Length: 591
Image (cartoon, rainbow, N blue to C red):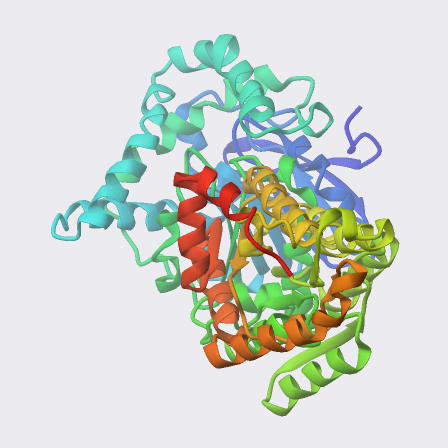
């Protein structure tokens, strides 16, 4: 049973004597939103999205001509985009007369909406349009054919050829008689396999009607009606005055992201969001799609624009990290504070946290005094429950951070046999456990959001340079290093980057706060040794600001591993080329 089993069904007369089956559900007193599907789908495509819209919107879904209970015209010409536009007009004029409706459309359904929006009175009937994997035929024509006429622009020329090649399957589906047979016997099942195997969509999220194969075969005439016509020169300038939100599925094998490069030239108010999804994002990312619709509707109803929507607005001037939320742990001093200040300088809004309440409040105050925005929290990253509550609060109050910098850590010096068990565990719980806790709490939210992001885990040169006198510290940082390598591969599937930062000798207060565990006979040397190290670091003048700049650069370039400071690079190279040298060095003299 589909989600529309309890919906109100009605029929609307459209052009050419076609009847369109319409299904109504949701909030009858809310603004109307029309959901339009493409090929080979039916209105059932939206079963995952509709529940996220039902409390707010009066939802109208309908089956395109040739699908479900709608009429199936016999002639191919009756499946042109102008006919799809007629069907939409008939639905809103009959079921939502006098209203300005919001529209969410996919694939050929979206292409038909672009056609409708070029009509002179479209802005009188449509309040907003959110498009998924269905660009305007006119816009695509201008991009592809226009770029092929400009071989002196090799990048655009190659993109146009690539997009042209990806649409050649449409020519096969335009063959009369052959297309319905191949669709029914081969392609319909292939599409289902693609959804499950290529896009990784669980079975329960694959929404097909009981007449899926029949619908796909009958409505395949849409290709013959439109494919070859799409290469004819447009007869009009395809300007759109309706607010348009384009959600670009970056893994779409059929419609590549660069097709939308010039859309801003033809749309007066445009928002573009790129999400890490395949062609059928209504099935794979229903919550993300619905959230995008809610945010645009909020803005059009007079509410402040969300950070995501501001970032998506085409043509809006912004600083390098403007409209970006960045979380930094251990931000009360040192590398954490410098990183927060650097992101704030580049326009980001900050969430700063530290176990030291006074220090983190000072960081937030400094950012505010420089014209930035920062929210301070006291947090012990070693406490998994506290971190989860922190993530829940941050995401509820400020949104999911776009960049998560896991920097909090402590220093420690001491041989393994000289270090008490509780102290060894403390170092591991903060330096490694804190990174794990933050990645678990924010990582899941980043993946569920579906809009990408970046995670930065601060490790150390000590991760790949064994030292007998820094057993606990080096072990904890090595764990962060390997954890990052493993998690990076996992997050990459969701379009989320991960950088492991490995600073060398950086002049911060970590040496001052480092605990030394040494034999009783050497206890008197600890403070002298501490002073020597602090003096050496100060004279070197390699401060946390340089690590901060490296972090920002790594986020922009999506670097996997980033040593910081000459010695960190040198030791990294030696550890990879000559690991035995590092092991031998570890046997050297210690405090």
